Length: 139
DNA sequence: GCCAACGTTGGC
DNA sequence: GCCAACGTTGGC
Image 1 (cartoon, rainbow, N blue to C red):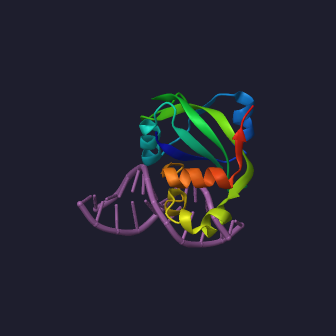
Image 2: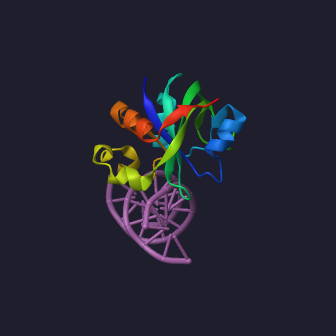
Image 3: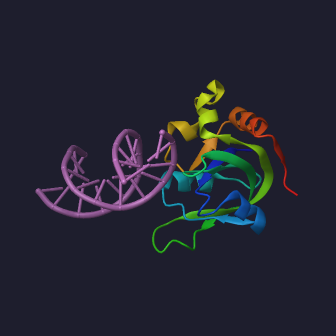
């Protein structure tokens, strides 16, 4: 299984929105590297949900429930999206500042490539963030 | 609001 | 194929 981190501005689509919807379509990606990461996702892969810009924190974990298919929101070009469902909410969101301050997360793609909206996460990084975030199952 | 990083576009 | 101009993302 692979692990990922996906960013969303909470004003555009938030973790709470995903929990309300139960199932979310992760569309709107218009960056080739991010798109290729979306296409590499397998059903069952887990993704950290990061709130960018206004909050700058990892707030939960979602699971890929449908592998990539064409992004209908794209007027032109060859873009993809996936479907996800919320799995675990972070009782303690892990802020960007906390990630930067954590030596064991120094290599995380979030820091190394700050503009990439869908990036792979190493298993050790994933489990560390999950425990820092005091993740608990979504009802 | 500013700016750094980075991707894309188009002229040459 | 290079590079300047421009647009976008996202942290500060």
